[in-house]
Amino acid sequence: MGGASVLELRHHSFSSAPASSRKEDVDGLLSTDAARVSSLQRRIDKYNRLITTSSTAAAAVAVTASKAQVPVTSGAKLRTLNYVATVGLGDGEATVIVDTASELTWVQCAPCESCHDQQGPLFDPSSSPSYAAVPCNSSSCDALQLAMGGMSGAAACGGADGGQDQQQPAAACSYTLSYRDGSYSRGVLAHDRLSLAGEVIDGFVFGCGTSNQGPPFGGTSGLMGLGRSQLSLVSQTMDQFGGVFS
Image 1 (cartoon, rainbow, N blue to C red):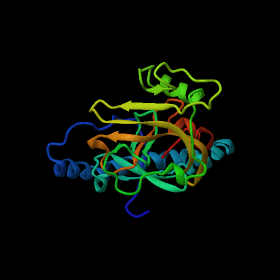
Image 2 (image 1 turned 90 degrees about the vertical axis):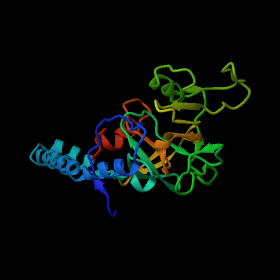
Image 3 (image 1 turned 60 degrees about the vertical axis):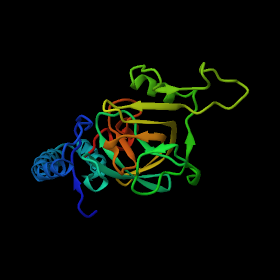
């Protein structure tokens, strides 16, 4: 992939500070990329050398970890100061902000009630045969509420009283994510096939957002949540990657 740098992902805060001068911010960010990539690459090389000289069992782990190569690039072309990565979702692709502090991956979905200006097509659930909404009476819906510390509105089910007629199919689990700069994403939890680092993860749970606004999102499709909760990408791909990304 032209212009891509393979970076080791570490936890950091989601950028929400207003830019007084976007050009200065972008120039400053890009000017430090070379040094950061060099430092991170040295760490990766050191890790690979240790793995190479370790036991056969550790070498097997290295083979698995080597698959989790996520090409991360600057988001400047998409009007965001954050790093971005492109993944496969359903039968399409989504370029999302890489955020190690967020617990849920979400993308903008069609039809959209109020969406930020995305560069490229929205994810269309109707065009993906492997897409399905997550029902309210599911562990994933409960997990989102738990990940958000029980925050009111993080995950909601049924009508105003949260009830559900046992004679009817379970309603979809809706979600609301709010960030400290006022940005937000609202929609329903869903699952679909995710393609990442040469691996296919069936039944990946994500947010299908139909109301998403906030300057930090720029022209991206949404956000990749690399937190530590049950619904983060790291946790959902534990069987494939062992929680190791580079």
